Image (tube, rainbow, N blue to C red):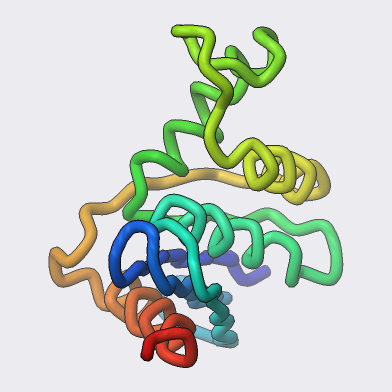
Length: 150
């Protein structure tokens, strides 16, 4: 059975500003890629963090059936948020440790819902560090942003 990987990235021109997200989905049998799919999108006025979240959400929501996958992101915000911080935010009624409302709560809730039907492993890699798959996800995010840039 091939292993499924989703490389996700977000991009923004200005923060806020026009933004895009990209996903490179790979099914691998060992080192061999047996299937590849790309996703991208964007918004006129957004933030980089929202685009990073939308990339992960889109990866999960595009899967037609419950799956086991690894999501690789260069966003510590997404990785730490979904694996660590979200539990405390929920206990506190979607408030941070300081009592402030959690930013992007709509997307955090959507991400939590999207991952419920899957078995997800989260991994972080350093962005713009020569990881070919991460660079492809970045290219997709920039392409997703392109229609919204003037």
